[in-house]
Length: 512
Image 1: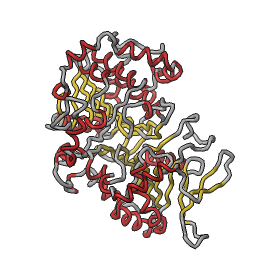
Image 2: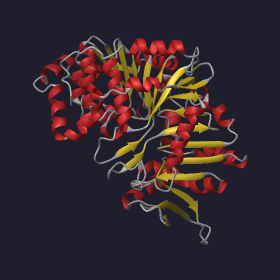
Image 3: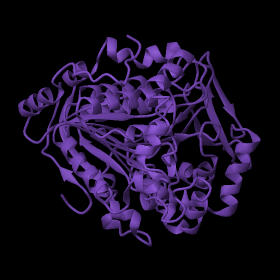
Image 4: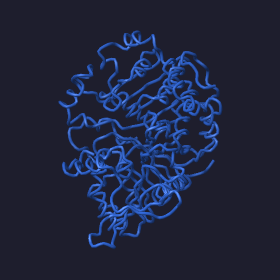
């Protein structure tokens, strides 16, 4: 393994009741670890197995079943944790695993999760559960009233965040990709749901990600949660014992029994075993930023960033480049690269959020200045709509959607999946993780997904309107009847337009 956290494997490609109380410790329904070991032994040496997890339901099921069937260890690393029925159910499964003796380690970014949710803290009170927060402020962390001031005093360092998202079971299975912990990531939020891509991985690449987790867990920036609280975990746990997690889960399921039934369907009809039979076996290269990236005082050296091994792949593209990034701020260097690709005859298509759909309008303001130049260079731009047409599978009932996916497909052969956005924040300031897979089978599946996301039923295609003297932009799309329509003004409400304008005015692009 290099300083970049890169491990490359050999080449090749082949296809292959409502809820339980967290108080009961039940044995796993099958020998997950032994089965995966058998699959790996039967595969070509060094190859890993992969399966896409596209729907929020599948992504949740994979995490819940992996936790429920773990026998030795569970390591979780996440940027955001939000309270909700999905998070409570996963915590319930974690407590079940802890009760049957599984060693559990939970590593959360301090800024986005902030360890505020008492259910997480109660879980940390279990003797088989260890919890750390990454990169907390050195001052004021123990009090909610002083914590913002502490972050402000350490602003040059505090804007660097651990953006990694991993769940590892028994060190030989990993679920990774763009999803955090929260209802909006698992089609369980009535207000907004994210369209995302996760990947189930087994075999050597999962072991490599376990190495990356260990590097973060042992780093000096990973601080035991007990050191960041006014009261110890044990005292906190005793105080909240009158309302255990089992009751919290009951309350959530009673409030929304239909959603609870959907999320717990894996207990009635497990799918993980079937997915293991559907794995695509191929070369996998695990990539991650060294945790010390967040401790540097300036822009890190390019050779120490996770993106370094991706550069030769990106520069070697010859026919087609397909990119999806929830937050897309290409910078002038990115504009030059994409323009050069188009000049060489490479078909370049980028899918990102529209201003009306994004959850961070400020970032969209950092993207807007590059649109016309990209279009004039021959790059095609697609922006996901807030409410896709009814005949699209991206339409989740009447719930607004927002793109949260991050992936790249190179010449329909290699595919990169992870939480890495194509913006300065992800590349320079955050720590990231991802996997590069050399598999035409997997690449084509992601390519087809992105092609559907670029359709007029799902997204606007932005074009330069050459019919007017001003040569402004237009947003082309389809309505529910499949009729071609266009907007001559960017679709969004005034507040979102203001936020995007403010980002351009303040020139905050380097921090986006």
